[in-house]
Image (tube, rainbow, N blue to C red):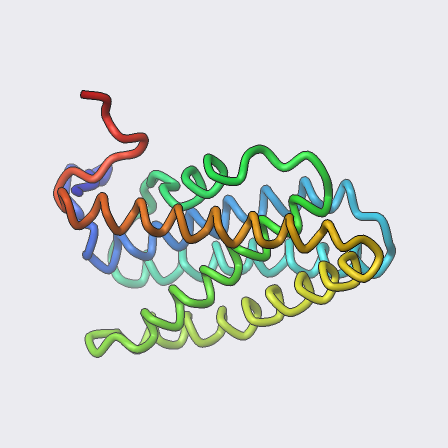
Length: 195
């Protein structure tokens, strides 16, 4: 898949600038989701955690923006393939618990993606430093949301079903993305085109 920058330059999906723009877009998307959840927070502790999380998401978007600029790139809009697919398989969250479960699954996926990228041999020092800094926060995001969800599971066992549903949606979203990339790496699209 090719993305065209404002200057007309083509960026391939494996181009570091394309990947960093994807990361930046995911952090911006995450900030929006956290803002919506913050309005629903049902305890002072959760409100405080969500406020910190919101700050982190905005900071991460800024760190990716800075990295893109330092690499001589520009900010471009990218599709949110993972988030679109995740929402398709999970459905629209209708409660704070569903928002938390969906965010927990997405944050777990982010940790996996960033960790995998960190192991890449062609990684520049700039990207490596940015990933390491962001991963510290991402691990905390997964932990605090998991703690909150486990607290909710103790009060209501059906919360575990919601968490399981979020993990299944994540697996299906990643499966779709992998299949689309494998089938047609130059033209993977979502939603799939109808015959």
